[in-house]
Length: 331
Image 1: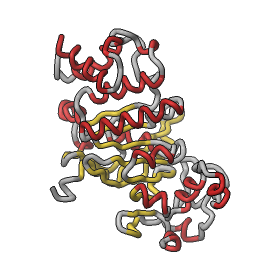
Image 2: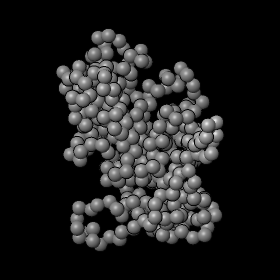
Image 3: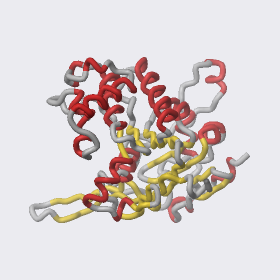
Image 4: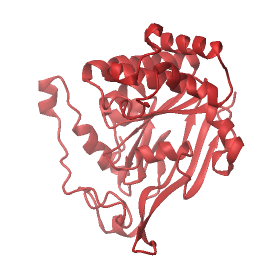
């Protein structure tokens, strides 16, 4: 298999702007620049971690890839098919291969449905199984995610947060997808439960050869589960590289600031490192800064940063960065 054949997902210049309307006649007065021209590739069986501050466009990127939002511009090519051009029944059939694990295990499950109905619903909607076969598949899926199949007729409120997220994972696996968007799947869980869910996702990936887009803001978790990491800020990618490369030698000032905030369990090592404290707040996505999006908070910003948008370029093999002055950080 060539490198090109090994690419499962190609996202090209993806743009997602949400219009802002005002007045009685609902006149558009602006738009929220949630995602502004991101491009990346994901290989089969790979986990791409997507990190950044809250509101930077991570979840919108994931939902737009799955066509839960129709993109303003750009292409999403999954397994050779451009999802943006698909409509109706063709898109519905393609959804069997693309699934999502949502952030909130409390809000993403219908409280009026039993666990058996929640996990079995995708099978029914897509006519994959019916009757007794659905019950057998549900029991098997519950067993895969380490839930007791005897609890299939219980309701979501009878389960803990970790158990509910496992139900969400089982539902995502029901149609045997090849690509799953994990939208901060552990951020709403207790720390003691987070490791269990992460280990479960890793085991399932090996078992079913799954490909993940793992969205999170916890850099320690992303380092544990991801093969490559992309850093996002205000709707644009700042940096992307392999996990080890980006944690060992980040080339973008924003990545450096994020990583300097990650706690280190060794107090001696922690005291030696230099912290980067960002000044100011994240600008509004309704009116983002000209040029480099990060320039208003960047410690090394110069005039060119306001005048020109930096190119997302490959500075080292497989290491991409959008910064005019990233060369000074290359070892």
